[in-house]
Length: 245
Ligand code: HEC
Image (cartoon, rainbow, N blue to C red; front, side, top):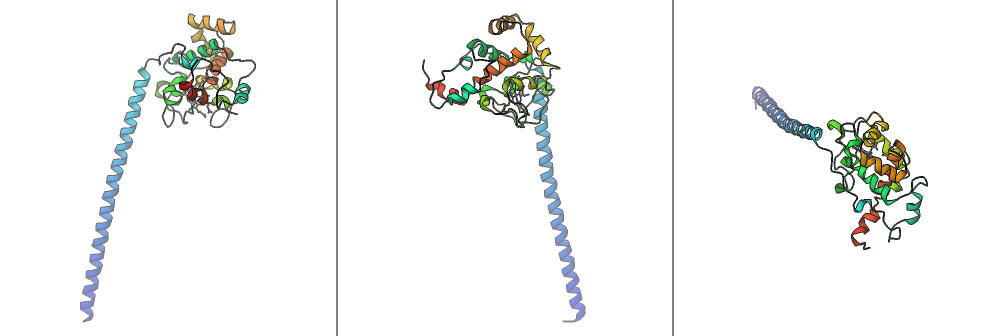
């Protein structure tokens, strides 16, 4: 083989290699572009869905307030599997469980009027139908505002040593004040602002007087909410269907 023939073959080889590389690069970029388009489209449709949900949420009526039902009935302590001592210890001496208080707490837990726009109740994010969660990666509060954390269940929260993912408060009473004033949850300027809304409703005036012997006020509001939550534990809930009185 002459050296010029050799050179020709070499250059043909290089040209082919270059062409092949070009085809590979072009193909890969097209693939990437398509994948990117799909991802962009997907993100666009997710954000559209979220915006739609936010629109609906901002026009939603508050969730219905249940009449005192099974969730508001104090359960017998003597049940298989119930940690009796831990349950007793979880109830603070200044907030004993009574049926009327639990029923008041239940009403408040489901009442959107505790929130600044009247549309978001505790039960919006702690929905009994979803085991007291909201089934969302992170919660959505007033005016469709999205928070940064996932809503834990309140079932068995009475046994928690601390509340919240970072354990920043200890008791259910202390905890209940924080979503009320959280700007992306219930958005009230203060707990007193929520109390003022509740205190304007004669049914609540009567209920607070009956349960606590005084008009609606912040500490009692939080006591009632905590009482309702203390009645929500997994053992009692799961035993309930088999429990006959
Ligand atoms: C907009 C949604 C939203 C609303 C409304 C809301 N919560 Fe929550 N809740 C959350 C989220 C999110 C967390 C976790 C936040 C964190 O850890 O910082 C949480 C945490 C809790 C916890 C702690 C549970 C645990 O295992 O640590 C309790 C108890 C609780 N909420 C009760 C309530 C009560 C009572 C109300 C009404 C006064 C309420 N929540 C209103 C979203 C909400």
